[in-house]
Structure formats: structure tokens, C-alpha cells
Length: 51
Image (tube, rainbow, N blue to C red):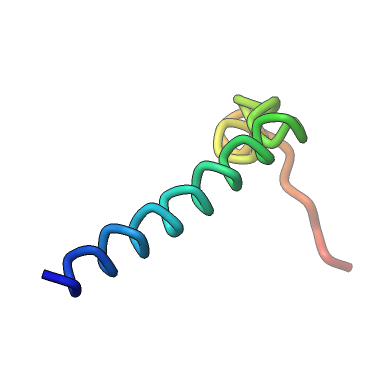
């Protein structure tokens, strides 16, 4: 039974770590650019020569 208490405490610590990371990423505007490189590569029509 004491192992169960240890696992619950460990899972709460890990969950709070991920919650803190998510809140930090939202506040630092990590999700601001929704079009990003994934959509930009679809609209890139210029061919660049490496000369």
C-alpha cells in the first residue's frame, strides 16, 4: 500500500512538471505562429539554385 502512495505522489509531481511546461510555452507565445514552416513549404514556388 505504501508503494501506491509513492506512485501517486510521483505522478502528481510529473503532471505538475508538464503543466508548468505547458503554461510556460503558452505565455512565451510558442503557439503564436499557426501557419509555420509546414504550411509555408506548400506555398513556396521559387526554385533556388545553389551556385
